[in-house]
Image 1: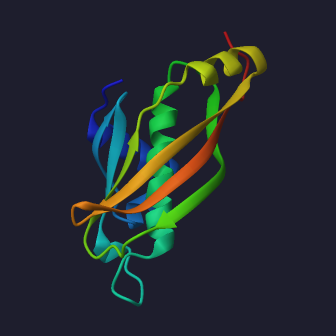
Image 2: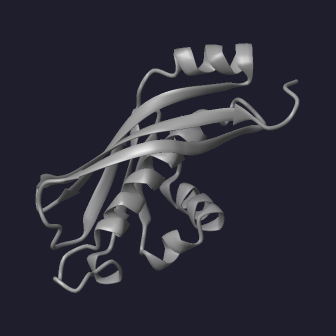
Length: 149
């Protein structure tokens, strides 16, 4: 799965409209992972740093997008986040990237085939100024929403 960043960006903006207001762009997307960029100017808080909710949102969107693209070969599969934990280690003062590394989906795919749903844990790191500023650990659920062919 090597994707054209502008096409992935169009999909994200269509499915998650607030992502456009947040200034989210796609740097890269492949089976190895995805890198999204957020603009600090669109996500400032009253401290002059990135709003924590924005950092969390771009981390969620990175993981959701990677998993959704990775399951394109399973038509009728929807992806949602079930639970997450966000750790903030440093303030985000400049444009920032959310990076979700690809993981094996073998167990998830077996569960989808067997039960019509499955779970996977994904991690997204939020990078700014050359360091990890925040980390999201999320459990995502993939479920069949229509008849498998």
